[in-house]
Length: 300
Image (cartoon, rainbow, N blue to C red; front, side, top):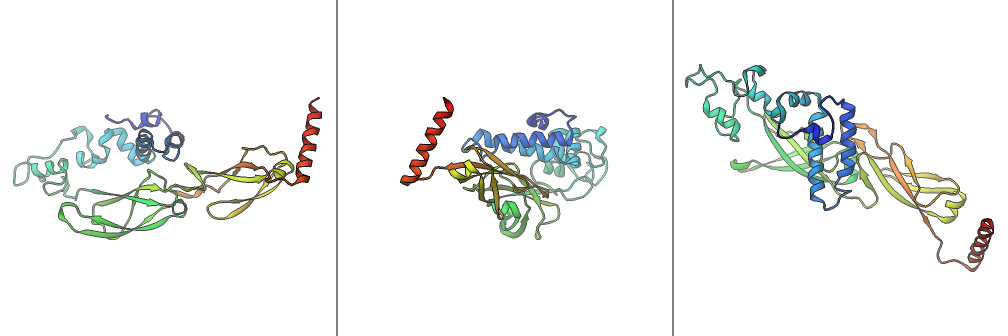
């Protein structure tokens, strides 16, 4: 097997679906492009992690991968009758007008040489064609889901088609999502490779978001309330007395939806940045000087 998806995620072949998911989320956070800006090696690793997760998180795909390895996508062509014992190149070459079987040697070549020949399998069905299109969305669009109109070029035949596609909530940079669209031909599968534009207000790590909020010094010391902007609304965050600079608060359910399970959302982590009053009035300076004196006496 040229590429071991289990090794990519750092799991064993007997790993449960939960263990696969946990390994993916841990590595996705580590190698996410937003966490490693400009790091091409991390970007390549992130794509490899997504590819492995796409296969191993799907029970049917994982079953084929465990049986056929990296050639799992072509399992239907190699074993049209499902009889794996016949070997990957087993064909019925004893019938048909050519004497080489119903598909013919030219068709067999066509399956491996990218479309030459009739493009049909031994069962007579059309070979599946995968179309792949890159799309860019904003963080808000990734939250709610959105639509795009794509211009699909028809390769050597020339011409193009306009397809309207729905992008599901929860997509992330590197996500490869299969979508349905009116206008695709029978046997065509359309995949979107998504990139999410950075948002100055939030840092995304998987399904979780991270943000910072300024808090007046007096509220950090005595307690108070501060307004926090999420992607959908503004909420009030209670600040307990004696909150230290850099402390984080978790707002459950205010993060990104999980791809394929939009009702499940991550969290928003809010980091406190204490704001020092400036400029100080004379009276404020006197009070801070008095506080400094009191604190000095406590240390004695």
